[in-house]
Image (tube, rainbow, N blue to C red; front, side, top):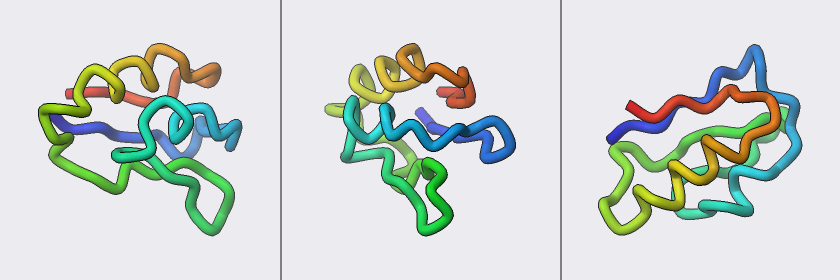
Length: 62
């Protein structure tokens, strides 16, 4: 599974690293980045929760 953050839609709310810090972090520009790909199997559920909890709906899980 691959996590992707659409940087054009990210609002920098920091919710995704709260759900899954093993996959998401905030970049220097204040926007979220999926820095662990592919997503390790033990963090797949948390990554999906981060995508579902994103208020900007800018995270896709493939």
